[in-house]
Length: 204
Ligand code: FES
Ligand code: FES
Image 1 (cartoon, protein in one colour):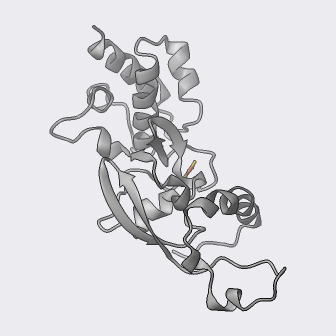
Image 2 (cartoon, rainbow, N blue to C red):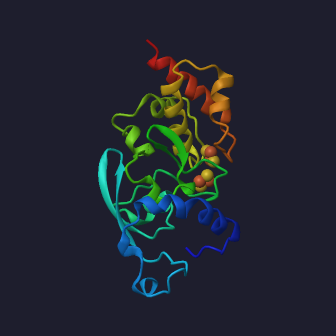
Image 3 (cartoon, protein in one colour):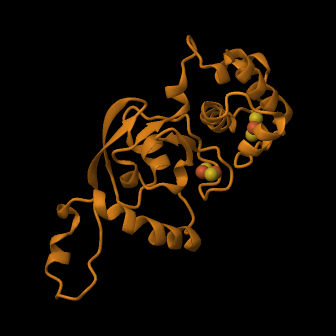
């Protein structure tokens, strides 16, 4: 799919990405042309770099450009792809791309893949399976907490991370925990009911 040029996104990536990417990018990324530049001339990052990502407990080798987001790497560069995290806004406003990074929810569209090296990445696929769902996944099914389902992986991941931190939340706390996730179908009441049901099912 062809994506329109978005100057704000480029600015963001330039601001947060290159500094963070520095630690993970090998010397060979500096092209020959860069190497021949005169001292004092800012060098340019280009080309692919091979990195290893820990996705759902499995080390996955992947080739990405330094500017590639984690979401893009998961969905479009890994083979086989990891498509649980969804691409919706791509600018950190909807939560559909939520993954856990070292157990904490993060928008994978705002994280560079190279910055996810040496971090534990958990997607909705890593939380459970159709045969053995985690409590939140099971509660979403039981409470019928989805309509189109596009936002669902993000909610399930956010709530799964939150219940580890607060296993017995109130409705208000669940609502607060989900404030970074948006559902265009408006299934919020059932999503919150599912979160409370999941907490109840794992209590004690
Ligand atoms: S796709 Fe990442 S926040 Fe919307
Ligand atoms: S169920 Fe459709 S966007 Fe949430």
